[in-house]
Image (cartoon, helix red, strand yellow):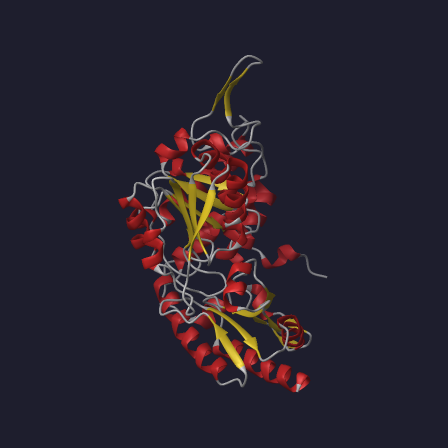
Length: 426
């Protein structure tokens, strides 16, 4: 049996960067080894990118290179490997800062993912600034990760959640949003792109409305960074969170962006090594940003892998990939609308490649199981967004979520599979 390392070059990430070329999905697919797999005898049609995206050779290779040639702890050692690992880890931070146009790499905090980033804000900025009778604005469109931490904070503090409603197309009702502000509003937190509906929300406009009331804004960008360019300074948000694994990087690594002035004013989230300057039993002083929020040994390999994913996205025609994905979404919409008894959930004017639907009275778990037999990977359930399910009065939905490596053949396989679902349940 061949070793997994046989497919790897073990070159440092910078050695495998390539100049951007016009977008070509066939060439792109060759960069992702898992797309050549077969599932239950069928070619894999991977349409669960909203849950996690697949990894290109460039990311896999960067992980193997780190563990094979650089493995050491960061920020603590004077020996060569520690210095090399630290350089690679901090280089990844600079890549993230550039990728989202942060003003400084001090504004980039490595976390486990979007969920931890939101909890960090809630338990530091929120706990310090929210009191009894105060209000936090969220939306009906949120993933549970952008509801539960705020609900827990409000329960602890005696504060209240106020909710931005949406229409049946899956778009925010901005007229209602404008009425939710009061002198007690302490934060607005909303999703940039819905993981269920694919809706692209008008982030900059919504931040501008909050600015009129002097209210800071956090944006959940987990579904945005894989699909479009994000400029946090153009959006003008105060916090922005996202996960590496949805943007072709490893699991267990993510980013909290925060304005430097706000991060400076916030207390640490975790205590331990690396986040301190001085420790005594009478007094402890904390490290400067970003170390103040990165206690203990971090996910070094994951951070390096995230940097490699950013290098990869910079090496392709990312704008061309977005245009291709928009065309594929249009094709998928037309194909799914031709399936009898199928109802799409989420038809916003501005959306990315997320297609959630219900098929007659067939439970999404049953549909997902039969699709799996055809080699089609989709997600079925409430997608950690039960308020959306409540809005549409459904218990669950089937979701096909696209990435720029998907093809019309993947959509065709999905449609053939759905016809099989209908045939089985007659």
